[in-house]
Length: 83
Image 1 (cartoon, rainbow, N blue to C red):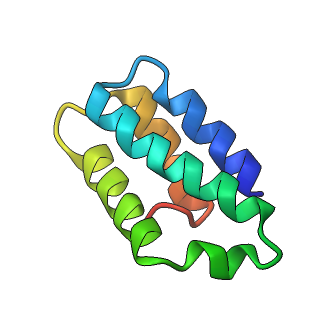
Image 2 (tube, rainbow, N blue to C red; image 1 turned 120 degrees about the vertical axis):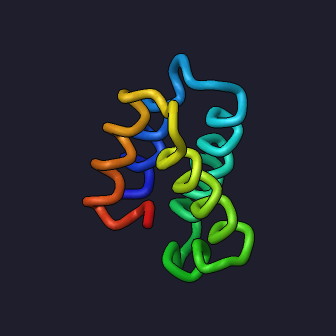
């Protein structure tokens, strides 16, 4: 599930602004690292991961965010990843 999430974020980053790409990369890296952990849920429960998620969420909601990125964010929100 986390690797699928990382794949979705990678797709969303194509053509994104540098700021959006950086926020997406932080979440991709966290997801891939957690996927390797014996307890992925605990591995994701860090202040850094929470900060990365909040930054991505704010960028997705900001005026001017690309529709493609917003569309991916909507799917991710429905999956419960971005709040």
